[in-house]
Image: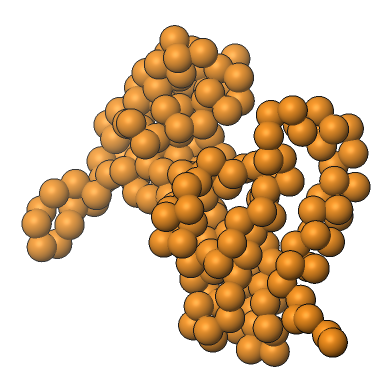
Length: 228
């Protein structure tokens, strides 16, 4: 049943929530996600990601109702804290990243976690700032470069970080749905998708490593300085 089972959750089912929080109290619980979607709403988990996973609009709405029911039961069992300045409830389902991984971000927020942008955590871990300082060009990519890429994902995170060092960034995604203006606004000096035309998709899927390598080789020749 997956998330649909949450439609039947009762307050009794969540009786152990307080104890679970106590077990991790004092632990720095970090939610590193490349998704900043909340749990519910037009930008929530079911609205944004259900279709990607093969769900119909009707199924996505049923899932949204189940998640909403779950969040309302949680609020009754464990009333949210209030903002000290405004007095408004601090609802974890509205937090950025609560919709990550189908709502796993929300669960971690309930346990006292705090979110950081996943790309920032990774770039810091690999020492990206030092690496990019020694580079003339940065190459990055992902499966599909689209509007979701503009909200905390790898390509834009890399482009933003490289911009601090004045190093150009180009992307070689599997496919691109971004226009030139959006790509430039994201900090990309160029976008070279592996699949340029729908007719190329079958060949790309048959040999993904080979087609990606061929594309990158062509890009390298384009960006390499000429030697007389």
